[in-house]
Image 1: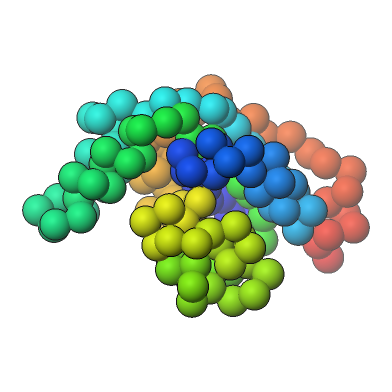
Image 2: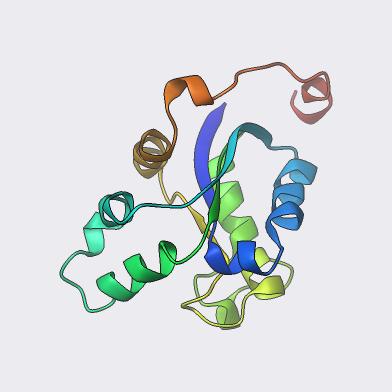
Length: 149
């Protein structure tokens, strides 16, 4: 099984969408391994978005992500990295496929509700940035036998 990092951004939390978004992932069959409401520090935000340092949108992006609480989560499931990204939809909500999280709830590319890891390497990096090992819970669900062969 694969793990990924997903974050409901400040706009999603402020709009009261965290529960609905978490529910979508659970309904799909992905298992929550870690979940927390948190206020991201500037230092963590700058590390998280470090690949964009020096770009014109870096400071507005950092300022936005620390502007309010976020819901950080680790999901586990078969091909969960790509599956979660497919569920989120295109970064620009106006270009996201109907039914995706961003198409359903998003309006503006700068307020697109959700973040998800884009690769196994990013997932590992982001999980380690936002969660301590002891904050992740491994467990067996009886329903897994109905989800996977």
